[in-house]
Amino acid sequence: MDAGDIFLKWIFPLLGGIVGLTMFSVPIKAVLRARRERVLGSLNPLPFAAQTANASSWIAYAYVLAPKDLQASALIYWPNQIGMMLGLFFTVSCYGLATTKVRDRQLAILLFFAFVIPVIGAIGVMIQLDQRGLQLLWGFTANAILLLYYTAPLSTIITVLRTKSAATLHFPLAIMQIFNGGLWFGYGLAVSDPFVWVPNAVGACTGMLLTTLILIFKEKKEKTSPGTSEEDGTSSTREFRINGVTSTDEEAVLDDQVAGGSRVLGGGDGSGGRA
Image (tube, rainbow, N blue to C red; front, side):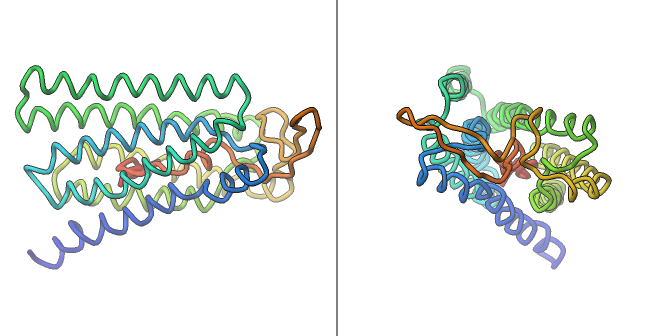
């Protein structure tokens, strides 16, 4: 193995895993604050359930990849194992603090994927797919879930274009998304695995789009307080009624992109999202 192979097949995925885990951990501070103060504030908990499902599907992909490439399997497995645990922690922590409508949506997402993922596994076993067949089955499944996950920031992008304000975008997260997707894209090409490089290429491009919007509307972002947006529902000043008492939560804006933090792989918006 020459220096180029070592760099692409080891350094790239290791760095991608670190960046992906960093993206996964973005909501930790806000979630811990919500747990401590018993107020959800502007934190959107819905992406956390999708994060859990996304990571779970990539864990399954890592399992079926192991007989062919144990190294790749391990590099994909561990970041997503941690990402799944974080997703569950975020989801459960926020569930009791959310409104009934949001809780119902959280539950619907979890139940949907709790049905779909085991059924797909059962199909692979019952029709007795070989290793290559299982890799294709879980590769397409993981990518399909990841593409659904990618739709999270679309509403934010539309809001930015309509208001010409980047106040709801998170610059560090967009940069991490570019690096995460780019690293896993390079690794996917090195090991000739389109299930790795395709979604991470999309994730890196999405990160570049978000970064471009931030740079274009930077001036207005600096002039606009993130707590002034009523249209996108991310006002930093909100009233909450707890046990009959109304309180105001002064929480910095965390939009869908920040709340979803990661899409780690293996997912670009995450591995790339993926790890």
